[in-house]
Length: 617
Image (tube, rainbow, N blue to C red; front, side, top):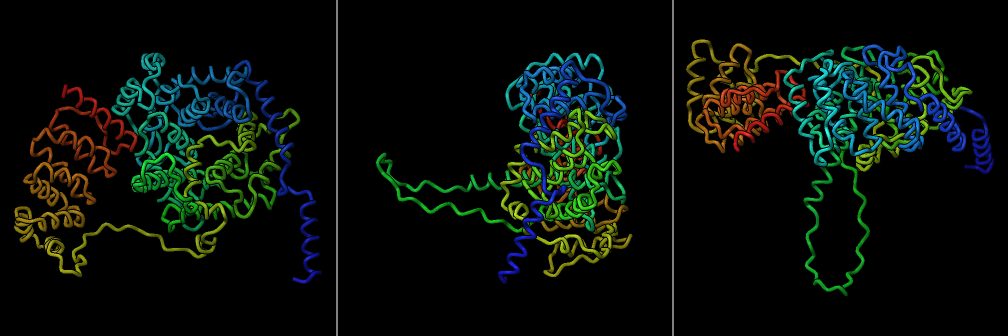
């Protein structure tokens, strides 16, 4: 670079640094003053209790005042994040309101926000209520891994009274009364919302479910469904997710909802990695136990290398690429908080969604733009003289809470962000490296993958596998030969016959599938208890299902604990088979219902285990 060019570039850099623009960001002192002004204004409004306005009809965030508790929780979270102590007059008033209202909440937004507030408050006495709210979220989760507006029906007065009487139980364990309550909810559960729910309700519920983990609530199955939901429904062309089912594109806020859902999968992957490393840790070196022995200083520990990106990473990278493009458009064209944007498009809700994604993943820039600098500048310009933000849209209280939470870089799920940011591969994302936008979001259309359910009659068999050959023969059998071939396979000796039935069941058409399944279950009745236990954990869905039925057909009550475990199987057909087996062996029915969510299955497993433990006494 020539001296003249160097000076020219430096001069342009100085001009850019000095020029006032939204991208330059506000100063730390300006941000502190803005937070204080907003918090003081909210404190004045709430120190005598919650005013009107807030959560709209159906539980959504709005300004119709139908359900105020969600707004009250948001304001309380904002005050706590702004530094208000728990004994602050307004915080105490909000806490009293939330503690009283939590027991009657039925809508997803309100349940999740009550849980989030009580978790952030950090009082041990609130743990039973947090667990109770989490159980409602688990029951409200749809089979597609999402949440709609409503989790549970109205809470009967006698049930609410019993819940209010709960006192803290053993740390880290589900409260016995909450467990019984969850069992009752599961037994009476109905899918009250849309089949898949929507991703706005879902992102609030995901935060609540994650926060409840540390309070002894079994949520792993629910989080499995969340991860599968967002991994399976991402738009490959834009990296985003729809608001709900269908092909209509979602708002920019939906990028953030999906990123939050995927963060739970990344974090749990990191947990598994660390656990595996601990289990395979270095063995003692056998040095003498001499207190004066000073071993030589070892080399500094090597930096954990990034592993190859897996499916989760690609989903996250696509989402950040698409979010960056959307955010660039909003910032460049001055659409942020312009008053002319739709829900989730550059409004206060979008900014808080952006802040959560940025903080959880630890990224400073989105689309090459300093998201916090741009957002904080826009917020400071939009703040009113009274310290609050515009009442348009969700109302001044909700908008102001979102604004303060953004400015504070609130990290409400600290254990989530810490795990995500420790992941070695995520370091590449934070550093701005990885796949390019062109690689991740192709411009050209791609052919949709349409699953076609047809019988496969020519199974690939390059190695001449006897089981596959027999399965192919069954699939191609004529009507006159079918029954004979099926009986021969059912009664034949050796594992190849079992495998042949498993392969056939997986590929047969609807007319013959049930006959093959019956034959497989009958064959497995000859197996030992130990063999069946192994088959219940097999990779093949058809084998797990048949093993569950065989446990019941043998009328062996020793398999009751095995079948209870299988109730949580990710495949609904396997779970139904396990439930049918348990009903046959015990005459009892503690669920789960057909099509139950992961959370409902977990609660049913707990109910069955409690019953079985009592029976053994």
